[in-house]
Length: 310
Ligand SMILES: Nc1ncnc2c1ncn2[C@@H]1O[C@H](COP(=O)(O)OP(=O)(O)OP(=O)(O)O)[C@@H](O)[C@H]1O
Image: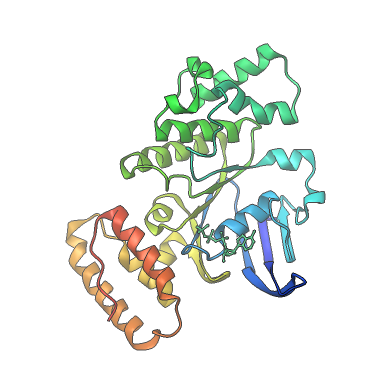
């Protein structure tokens, strides 16, 4: 039995139009996506903006209605919100992209982290304070932080507060949607490494959503590459990074610079080969703007120049 299994997931959003505001079509945000996750591992969903990654994650946690398909968590069908019992809702938590806007600026850290505890469990004020202080220590912040407000912390520290809030109910699965993309590059690695440390400590499973294949490479065991609501490729990290099949995956892989300087020339040649394949066969197939955006953000993050489209 897989820990989490997503089977042929479809999520369509209606497009309304005309005088009567009728449904005139659908946006196929997710269109037949299947994958499974093993406990304790990190699964990466990667793809450009609008490819359906967040909608997939939001459906798993119950924030989107599923048009068709099935989501199974530890063998239980959790496709519809109704099927998500209190325990299941505790088991799956989310870390959001922007620690600046996802933490209420008017609330103190104590209230922010205690919120899920108050919603799901009954604790005395004393127990609650102790739990929040323990969570703060776990994420590397001082217990005295409970009285502070979000603006008194740096971006990286705020994301640690977001992680502490997600951990409050001792979840098994964490969906991390672009967890570091709002942070400075210098802080990104710290937060990602810290997420890996607590994963080992607490045997957490991550579904990591990112448009940056470099981050996915750093973190994930298994990867699914999405394009316009569909999977173009899926495989282990080794498979995706050593032998990508789809031209879209090849373009993303080729854009990431190798840390080893001796490999750079080989990689440059690979980049040229991929570019030629792309120019000769796929010019009409892709939404070039979307792909250009993903490639540009990889190039910005890793400070490399990309070959121009021919
Ligand atoms: N509530 C909604 N109503 C209508 N369309 C939606 C809604 N949510 C998402 N979409 C559309 O579904 C598609 C997939 O969006 P989604 O946010 O899942 O993509 P993504 O890959 O996560 O991109 P991003 O990183 O920009 O969030 C997009 O075309 C988006 O505009």
